[in-house]
Image (tube, rainbow, N blue to C red; front, side, top):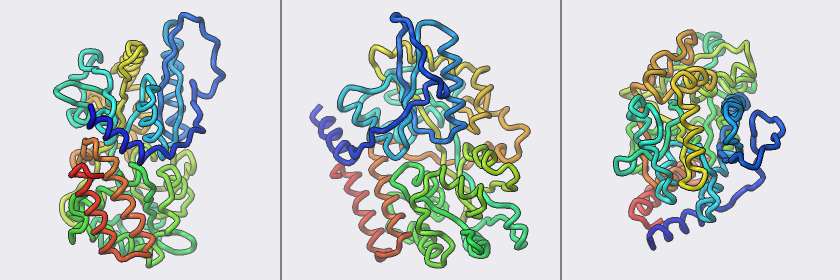
Length: 413
C-alpha cells in the first residue's frame, strides 16, 4: 500500500498542472434533457478533438439514452494534453468518471494507480477480439478494460506535389530526406513532426525510431541517434519548421489538408478529417520508410470502468455499443479499425486509402504496456523537442534522456 501511495504521489507531482476548463458533448451538443429522479446518470470522459469523431460518439450515446429509460450517459471532453493529469487527479480525489476512454499505452499506468472493474465475465463476445487489442487490458488473466478500436500510422503524402516533381513515395529514409527537401518550396514544408508532451507525439515518432533499429531503452545508441538526427537535419535545412513541434495531430491534419505540409505521419482517423477540410485534395498513404523490415505502431483506445455505483450501468452501455452489428455500423464512420476480427475483415472495402491501414497491421508493433510508460513518453518526446530546436548538443540530449529512462526503470523517477 505504501508503494502505491508513493507511486501515485510521484505521478501526481509530475502531472497535476491541470486545466479544468473542459466541455462535454452531451449527446451531440443538444441541451440536456430533464430526467426523472429514478434514472441513473453516468459520465464518460474522452479526449478526441475532431468534430466528426465527437459526432459519432455523441450519436451512439444519444441512441443508447433513447433505447431505455433507466440510464443516461453524459460526457466530458478533456484535451489530450490534460487528460492524463485530470484522470490521475480524479483517482487521487475519489471522483473518477464511471467510464474513461484511455489510450491503450496509458491503460496500465491508470490500472496500476487505481484498478478498473473486472469485465472478464461482463462483456459479450470478448472471444472475438484481437489478442493484441486485449493485451493491454489484461492483468492476472482477467480483462480490466474493453478495447474500443485499433489503429496504426502510415506516411501520408500529397500526390500532386510528388507527381509535379516526378517523385515516388519514399521507401527508405534517404529517399524520405531527399523527397521532403525537394517538396519544400513556396511556403510548403516537406514534412512536420509534432513534439508536444503527449502520447500522440510518441505515437508518430516510435516507428521512425524502431525502423532505424533504435529503442527507448537505448536512446544513446548509434541507431537511436539516427532517428533524432534526421529531424535535426531536416529542421536545419528548413524542411521542417521548428513551430511544428507544438502541433497536435488535429493541427497536423489541418496543415496537410491546406497544402502547407507535403508529408506527415498519421493514422486512419485523420483521413476523413482531411477530406472534410479539403474534398479535392489528392493524397495517399504508404508504409513508414525503413532501413530494413517495415514497421508501424499499434494504437487504439480502451474503455475503463470505475468499480463503483455506476459500474453496472456503465457495463450495460459498453455491451450496447460493442454489439457486433452496431459496431460494424459505426467503425467505418470513425475511420477506426475494429478490435473484433469478425468486423475488421470486412472494413473499408470501397476505400482504397483506408483499406491500406488494415494491411499495415501485419507489421504493427505494440507499445509497452507498463505503468512506467507515460514517464518514458515524456522523456523521449522531450529529447525529440530539444533535438528539433537544435540549441543543445545532440549527444548530451540523448545521454541525459537515456540516463532518465534508466532511472525510471529502476523506480527512481
